[in-house]
Image (cartoon, rainbow, N blue to C red; front, side, top):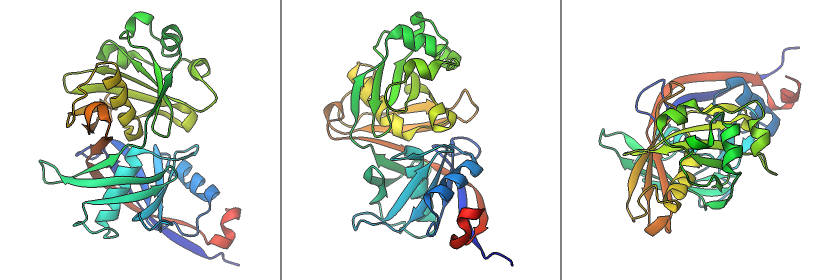
Length: 305
């Protein structure tokens, strides 16, 4: 007997770039009703991009849509490039009017506000408001250097800290771009840095434009991430805290990430209030690259495929 099968439309977009085949890849499934948690995780592993989002009706009246976010290994409570990419797709398919400049997406962490600004190129520059940021002491300098295959002298002289806007990471400031490009997690790197929760590792150096960055997240199934919006608000908080960026209201700068891995990404940062007291926005452009259909057994058979 032939099983009933259902098609699921999806798109792949490159986020934090105006050029195709750069930035951070994102899979976006447009109608995810009928998909259970296990199936969504399997689909994310099948696509094997940094993250895949599944769009469904919001359960809250103050949100335009509900978005669930999966890496190839786990579900995330919040992530930046999925928020920006999902916003772009929702506007492109007409789910949200292009005249609507502000709305919120429902994520596991709660409502995430987004807004749309017309960039200098005429394309939409999509901003998200970073959730509340928490800062805690990180591993010592020697441990971080060993975990990253560096020497203590490669570090900038600012203490490593664990900074989180929903996903905690170890932030390590390095002296220059060359040190950032040489950084690589040792085989026991995550074990050296690990606490009670899963962590990513974010290395950067200050630049005239803002920061030059890389991010490693093997515990999330991502060896290296080409653009990490959820870490860029925390990056801004760390830089302000340690005098590496202006803390003035209205300060804008960029984080360049993914260049070492051939996926150059530009993440925009906007500080609201002194020291970011009224919030930090992270923004970027989105470039569509793929439209496709994934066909799966209907819901009643989904557990057997």
